[in-house]
Image 1: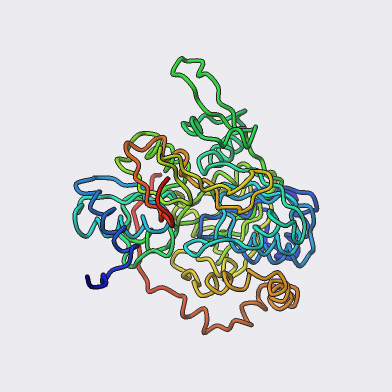
Image 2: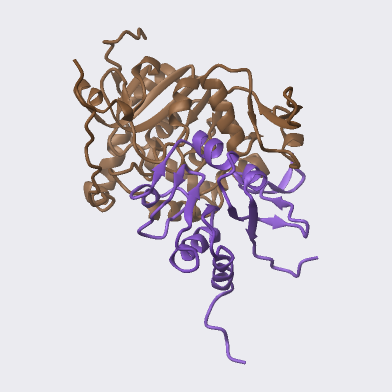
Length: 154
Length: 310
């Protein structure tokens, strides 16, 4: 068998993008989800509106955003609002069909860890923290995760 | 400072920090990837403040630098990272190894901290939100509480108000009374201005009053809540200000490598913070050509007609 001409990341991005087929709204997470959601808009979900926790509804990025806060997400967007409005009026109101998120660790039940590895008070590794993930997972109609698993899932 | 309608609040960054940021204060330099006032953070380091409680939803490079410099003993946050790049190694060294000193953490999700600012801004006793149910976060932070909704919809999370001693907020422009206009990712800039006990606004441009009054919908922070105004062009570099300059991503990538070694961070602080008298010297050291490369091409919004009624 010949070597694949794509990376594992690229395959994950394509698969995730295809899962957004027909969706109207997606809450875009940090990292690979950012790329997958933008790809979906160009392919399987042309009506997809990208929602970013930074306060953007209906982004029209002209370059790949460096992170979920990038000036290209503001210029040309449908609406840019405060984070109070984004979390209250868009997310908690129930307007998010799908959330596509990344993370550090996940178990087979979908419990997600982006906080610490080891004891909370004396962590071996301090991770970034929840960001919006806690309320996004609770309030989005569906939540998809993209995570690298260095070892087989146990 | 007296705060009448005509008070001229324009001061230097040195004076604003010396007057309003004291040891042991709680301080927020807010901004969600945009509007992050590095110039103020560097001045706080230069003035060697100690034992601060730093507050921000998304601590990034400037808090990494401040914590490496030893200004803070506590961090209140909801997501810390070098955005789009990786970890914040100085904060991790403080948390994991107490270098240069221990750092206490108080942790929320974004909406939790949004709610704390919102309650603080309108002086409410708590903010209810649909979050945290099923999460381990309330166990890690007793200020997050789950209660029974008195109106019978079941369990609801609440968070208490947050009123920082000082907020430092960057924006595009303001008049000399501190009436401030911004357009960009808005983060919680407006709410934080109303929540904090003292507010320092830092702007790219100081404009005349007529400019503000011509477009009142864009005035998110009134001078009524502003104590000091600082004019500091490129004061948010290497973060960005919509329409003025782009994020300087090379700086974020360079910090990712440099910050993995505490000695290298100390050398960087000596060269770029302690070794310079003020932000204008930092801008001069980088050179105007550096900033010219970060200037976006124009993308003007059409003007609107408010109408004149008399």
